[in-house]
Image (cartoon, rainbow, N blue to C red; front, side, top):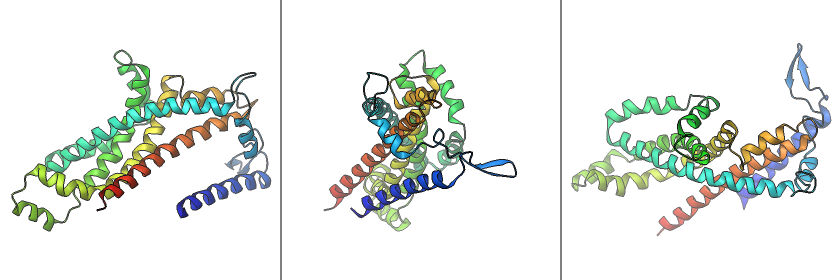
Length: 274
């Protein structure tokens, strides 16, 4: 309850900051030495928050369904893509972490490339992945691969750190029992890695959402929230509040995914408590 109240308070502070800036800043934004350093505050660039919320209840097109309903269906589509991408990313990240923990040679050889993989701009990589996979998999699966590409990294790094976290005395105790590598992994290293794994999973969930949205935009995949962001952006001049409804939908999808992962962590912790 305390965390929920804290989160609501942060939302209220952010909303207050938004409206305060609109009330105080010039419509053309704040400039210094001829360079704009703070964004425009007019209604076209920064519509009032109540205008965005009101737009959610209005039809997307004349006579059509309300925007909130369109966003909900788009979020469900993207959520399915995120779920597949997150599952693949977690599996790949976990396998890499176990391999790097098992072999120092593998860690020294793979870890630099794991880190290097995240330095490639996603907007440049997404069309390439779409081109490679377009002939052998459906378009939604290509987007899932892009989501998995971002999701595997925090899992690999976090789980590796967790697998390496047991004290040397605990590992020596397992060795004194002639425990196999697999038994040490299952009974000692994996339980010790949970405090590192769950925060990594939340990061992976948020990264998978970003990857899916960018992937939908880059590959032109329809039906998801990424496509709505592009479509609504084209109406930014005449209907600026509509653009922010798509952004709000993407943000809520990210919160929903991380919230589900947090719930999974609590259920796992409750199950582990004797």
